[in-house]
Length: 287
Ligand code: HPA
Image (tube, rainbow, N blue to C red; front, side, top):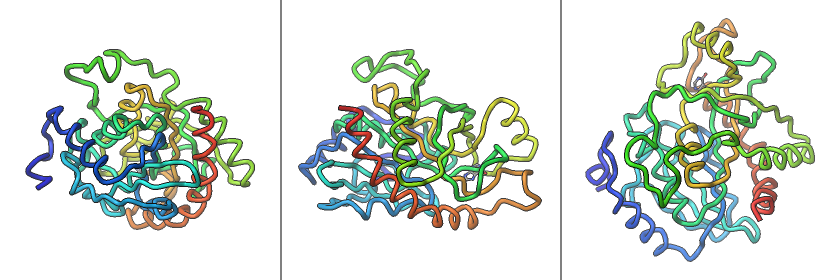
């Protein structure tokens, strides 16, 4: 039903949002103010929520399914202590053939549901040579090289401005909280600039040299469009990358998707512990 309702590459009629919202609100009385998007191989966090309501993306009107290996494809609402939380376990990517509107559909629906803070996680390649495979990096900023923009087209002024500011796209206040929590838990956490590529091929070594030259520290195939839409809607964003591999040309070996998933699996417990401690602090910061 979903494929018919929301074919790959098509723009979405606004009525979809109302239907999606009504559908989710009909399934749960939870009204989360904070949401987490879990990237490749990082899906475990959804399991720690209590009073879970699990909704497969395929059931939500207009919601694109995730075809990527390592992505679960469900929305989970639940509680982390007192806090009401929404988790997107899996996301749609541009490289799957989805339009920018489809890739950001979940963020837009969650924004309408009342989410004010978004934590975007992903798997990324390490460009900065000091990074370690399996390590976590806070995204301080991004360089969007995906070649499309989810805000292109008519602007809905009710959602946000035509020309949104992006100078604090990855909230400094949230990053400070994240650094404090990481220090308390003895989790090493660096910060870096995320280069967003269309994919699906990994980069060439020349592309990685280019990305390093223009100021990128990590590289991936997601997150930027979601961060743009979240900022447009006035949400605060935190980005966390798991360095699943060193980027192309840095090590004398090829990049393999299995390695990426395996490393994400290794980092999953650390990320889980981190998110459990971090989310309440972010909610406090949001006030
Ligand atoms: N490049 C792009 N995206 C990625 C990588 C990479 O090396 N690793 C995980 N996602």
